[in-house]
Image (cartoon, rainbow, N blue to C red):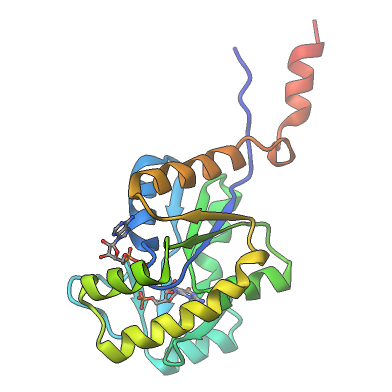
Length: 211
Ligand code: ADP
Ligand code: 5GP
């Protein structure tokens, strides 16, 4: 029988200014890459049309969210756009990583920075950026989901968020969607080949050294 390399699951943190195409890319990535699962966040915002509780988000009240904070259930949480709480629960991440399943999380830049600063979880961080601020505005307008004021706020936030780029491991410019997807996929795949992540290295040595 041949060797099988066993690795721990890896946590992929994806951040991007709103409208960059992060949700679009993550959805496509999940369809194309096996052994990769999405961490469903908790939020206090209302569901949008078509969003499903327990699939897109866990929609909870402000009180429930604050209970979870008190009970130390989050890896990170933030108030995004100064409005609603968003957070990643430990129960969405750790058990999967232990089983060798890679986890991808879509979180805002503040949340990603929190995880980087804490330094108690292993992760690979990827920053997705649009090709220009004009194109970002065009995508936000075309998506037709946010009000003019909301779009202005997102553009101001984007100018702030870009300053955190240097803290990330990888950057992907989402200009041509298919190209960005290819880059994202190659990052995920190469992380899976890191020797440092192999859990059964002695089994592999043994396989090649024992007669
Ligand atoms: P985010 O999750 O980062 O807020 P979305 O995935 O909702 O962004 O994408 C914002 C809008 O831009 C959507 O209407 C989406 O269809 C569009 N979009 C995403 N990627 C591209 C791309 N590479 N080229 C053109 N439009 C794109
Ligand atoms: P939306 O309301 O458009 O779904 O998401 C708004 C922002 O919240 C996005 O930038 C998204 O990345 C971020 N977000 C979603 N889930 C989480 C989370 O669990 N933690 C943090 N910090 N941000 C999140």
